[in-house]
Length: 33
Image 1 (cartoon, rainbow, N blue to C red):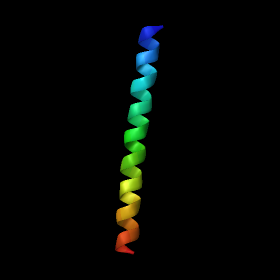
Image 2: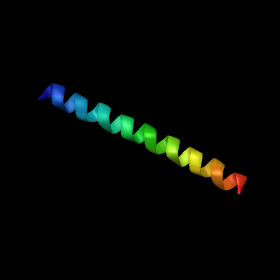
Image 3: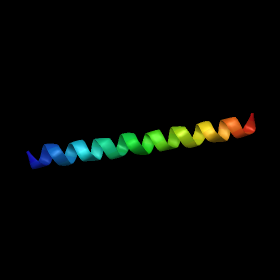
């Protein structure tokens, strides 16, 4: 149980980090435009 919960949290953190990276790239793209 605990292991699965920790795995889920790590997965969520990774998705959140990717989301931030994508948003940052999008902002830079719009600034260049």
